[in-house]
Image (cartoon, rainbow, N blue to C red; front, side, top):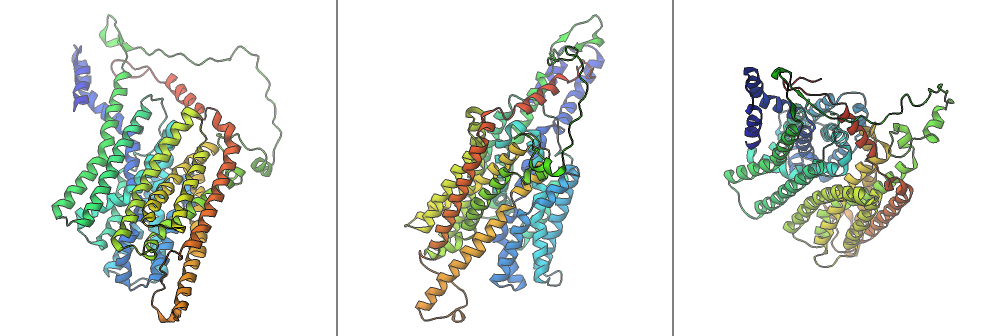
Length: 601
């Protein structure tokens, strides 16, 4: 590669002593070790882990195999789906464990849970073990789905701490890879196993676990040194990820309208993997550039062996010695309860877990997430039946689902990068972006409540986009307001509102109102529930009242987030990343002097 040749030329030129030649020959190896231990390779490993952490999105593909193999009815299958969502969204356990164990141990726990949960499901579907009871299957799928929280916590939280000044963009990328994981793993399973949905369960069992094990020591917290090219690298990742998403969208559509051979599936999987590894090439090039810039001019000496690289550093101004020492004053003791409720840190400082969870800001975030994510997930879960009730054919309904998935990805990317740009350049409060996203979601929900010909296409795009945008905003806002010390627990607790909102709005409201409309239709035809096998409602009235309620709930969430905007406006007017820049600059000042033989002084 070009940078490799440059590395050799830079070190061989001017080396006259045999020792210099020996040191120059080892320089490529030193750079490789440096790169593999650096934060850019750690971020790339996080990309791969997040790309395998979205197995829950594939439940619709393999669920029919579970239903057929184990003889389940639709009610039982929906119960499995609920426990799958429960496991995927309840990440408090992984967050609490992350506070007391290193990242590598957290990733190993996730890998073990992932393999154990899905492998047992695969054994049951293949008939290799006795048919499990329903509660056992619910437990297995809950364990398997919950494992993604361990990978999510290990990769996302560590990356936020490694790139604190670009956390919005970085979270958008990581959650974007999770959104694409279903499409990526579909291409891999088609290439490895053909169109065998049972084998997909096996792939979901071993591949994410293998990724976590391979990179178990790669993903770790690394001291942050200021990097002026950091944002440029994230934009390169943005472009390459969009290309990957567009390719996956095109290939998914082609696979539905045309017959692919085995070679065709292999080719599509190979292209997907190549596009997935594109960021690695740019990371290597960028790290090599940084490696070269650290080699400053050499001060010549009569003795070549004593050449020392000179690094000019200006220590920060200190007031030590200019002021007389002050006798320490004892701070008045504050009760534990008062410390939680009345003596909280400033926004942006590190809150304790209870200080954050019992704060007004977190309550508002919880309400906005309950309303916004709960309504969006309800729309996503009912998209198939929505298309059926409005008379769309099966192929068109699958198109709606594909549009939801792709625009979910674009929402995650958009929220991460645009909100980061607006915050840094224009002091635009990130909670205000959340308000705008929830108002956009209201438009999509109204298009479903009052449908017109073709409006479901627009609704699926709007809801998919707004649904995807909410999670990166939620995670970033929590990190900004409450600090990073207990971030792994706080962001896991923050997303608890999502399953709670889904249960209330989907199961208790939308499902109940749909069944009520279906029974009314039966009564008009002189039939009862016992006369039909499946309760189906056809017509625009089936979901109208439910989605009017969802629109009102989402609007209430938007108003709630607007209150958070008012409460945090002064915080976002300041420099929210100043603390992290100062820490990075202090670390640069403390960097050791490097001699020509590679030793440090």
